[in-house]
Image (cartoon, rainbow over all chains, first blue to last red; front, side, top):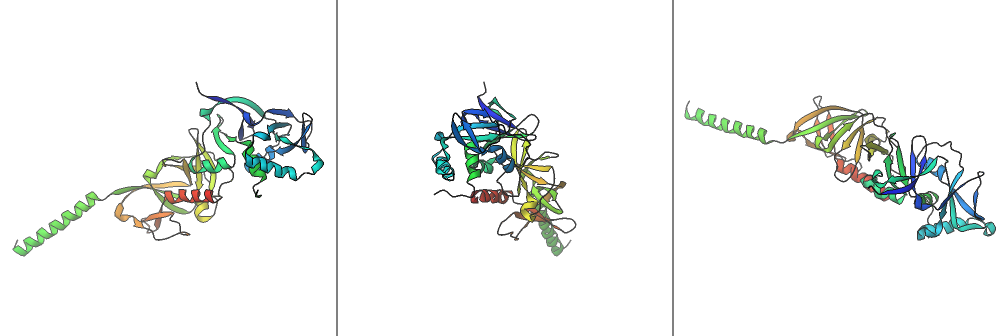
Length: 168
Length: 169
């Protein structure tokens, strides 16, 4: 039996992305396009993952962003926790933004599927380690021939937010 | 035949035999001659696993401009090098690729078209002294029938360049 795992599949016209299901613990439907996400009475910093993927992978999305993934920051790496503290420092002290959770806006063409790990390929030789550091872990080609990139959302997001910023 | 004629004959025969022996022992190298934009290059045939046509190219972020993305070969991603971008800083538009024969990497070179497959004696392959920004992208060269120099690409140097650029970033 092939080993399978649950991934969130984000689908666009000619490209797709896979997100490890274990990297978020909940998802919510957004009523409107707001700067922050309200979740269980908490105000969450909201990162536009859809826009970030559009920019980095050079494709256009006409999707309306009505879904958000809720992620637990307490399980992030030490470096990324520090980076998140830097983000929080940018908000006024009384802004009340959660230090425990954050929210990632994604397109609405998303579903959770169980995928055999054997279908996902590591990136070729020299590219592997380089892209791993940027949050691209692997990829697969779907039956329609289009690629789906496996994204580490924690690494990908912080890399985008801090590409020109050095954290002491 | 007098002695002189006899000795001359023996000497000539020896030389000719030596010459024939050299011809027999000389290594013949198989080269694939191809075009990238307006320039003609060659690669040793054993460096190429296959030639693929009309394959879609998929963009990949963060990489140097001479890496154009990935192509799909039997479900596996192959990194595509645009050598025109690397050598001439001009983007090549093509959907023809060499799948390179590399043990621990999956690499494809974007090309325009294959011109010929040549069998060339080793002695016809010249060392290249040209250095492009201190890099040895061209390991050696052959001379075409028209008298033009065709550079043979140094695959290892091209791969090393990517490794260096990725590590520098």
